[in-house]
Image (cartoon, rainbow, N blue to C red; front, side, top):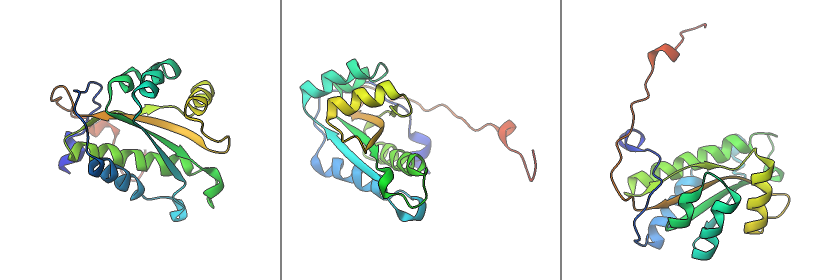
Length: 166
């Protein structure tokens, strides 16, 4: 559980390359996520082009850190791959969390920037990254080596636990 308790949203990165092996492990972690009926309805776009990264804040108001990231992963869902309709969001969200945990394990910082369900963000990201109409952009994950170590806030709250019934 070490990575779970160390993971926190990191929005500032140093100018240091991330190896292709590490990027591959991030994607392997994402694809290891559980999915409804094991459909795996995800696609991943690795954005490394610095000019493209600098354009991300113009299409997502809360993803300014992407411009300074080593890379950003766009996680997309493909509803046509679903047997259990409507579960692509949960499936891709599990993939995102796995990527975030693996980033922590690798000594990277990363942050989940939601795109879906905001239609204007989805359309802007779709246009910027030339995503086909049948594919739905769910989130952007900027990542890189963090500028500083950030302590995670403890979130355990026993007031939110109910036993048997509310």
